[in-house]
Amino acid sequence: MSMTLMAKAMSIKVGNHLRKLVLIKLADNANDKGECWPSYQHVADQCECSKSAVKGHINSLIDMGLVLKENRLGVNNGKGNTSNLYYLMLDNPVSSESIGGRAPKNTPPMAPENPPVVSDATPPGAADGTRISHPLEPVNEPLKPSCQLPAETDPEVQVTDDAKAVLQHLNQLTNRRWQVCKSSLSGIRGRLREGFTAEQLLLTVDYMVEKWRNDEEMSDYLRPTTLFQPTKFPGYQGSSEAWEKKGRPARVNGKWVRSSQLTKATGDIPEGFNQNLPAAPTQGGTDDDFI
Image (cartoon, rainbow, N blue to C red; front, side):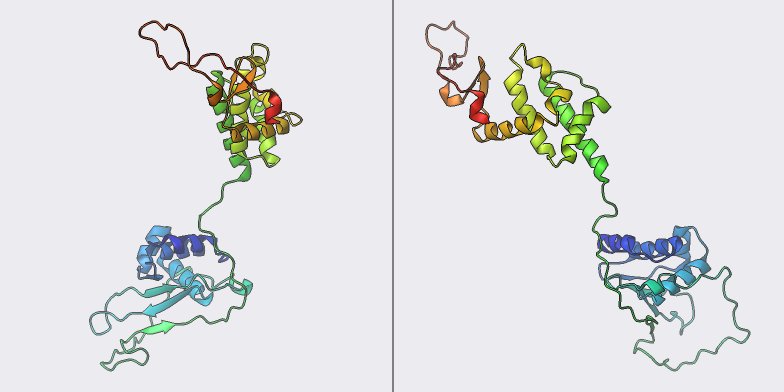
């Protein structure tokens, strides 16, 4: 199976849902060179349709220039059932006139009353006794870009998923349980739709939690409806970027303190305590450092 051909087959319009399914099944059986040789019956079984319908749709795909068919002779002097060899040419542009394709027949073709006699002579054509069917119509339409993935994620679904991740991060840092509901997600989704990235929102949460969580008055405002207000969030976000560039200093006693500004504890420390515990900061900064 070639994943590249499968993706291309899914992106091509052929004008009929069953014909599209037949094309995808051929791609599913093809190697990376675009060659496959499934029998009509095998494709019919996989597509849950009749053998004659598969024949008709393959002929339509040949007419559209998407498939080349090479008839292979049977193993017993040209007799017997040998599946055809197909070449997928999914890079060929498809004209709008050919999308309708050839309508498949509802009944299998009737055998002629006097079947032709098979001679021992080599039939005209290729040296190995094969015959190649070529597309009947030239195609001049520009090639439509093929996608590498079968489907793209809906932008609104991605926004909601990112908003849930931001809310979960806020809950983890604050040890709270804001519910996944419209009131909690509305502000987060609004900022994502404005162009802020999920990474910027997560950084802002880190910054605001560090700033307010030890402040008895402000810690109550660590909630989604407050942090992601349209008028307030840009300022919070800008400060978080400056805070990140300065190495994410800690908030101690209402001031920003870098690790280099912390001194070792002095004096007699009872046995069993860590002698590297930091003491109170010797100096600090203000919020203006991050605005």
